[in-house]
Length: 164
Image (cartoon, rainbow, N blue to C red; front, side, top):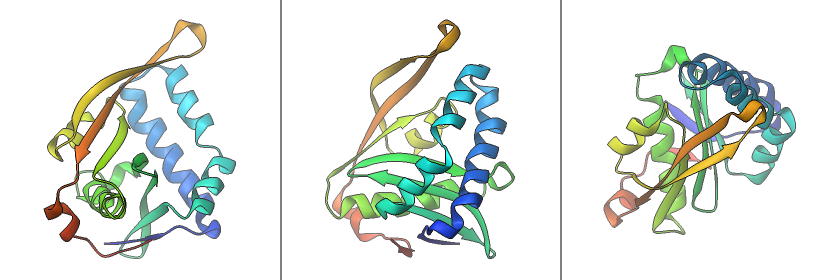
């Protein structure tokens, strides 16, 4: 596996990864309004902004783009892996790369966890520090966990091969 900086020519593949993952995984945990909210949030324009920030990467596995991750300051803003590649270490690899980049400037990583990802983050040492609620249409509420992890000196040294 290899994690590299995303470029604008990858935006359509990233869009497909995000929308496929959201529609497949989130629909098991959330009502349609939440799935629609996340799909609308991850628009082509939003993806191009993430790429332009220099903080969005893609995960290659056997020369296929199978996942993506993004961060802003010390906040991990997204980790998505195509469902066919779940439980193969792809999400953990992306998280290793994002945490390594964040640890260069910050002692703590923060993220907003979807219900489907909370256990992954807990296994990585993240602790819930709060809960967020976002009101959507039809009186639907998006509920998520706000999680933090202290990035120790040990985690700063064990860096995967990422080019960001």
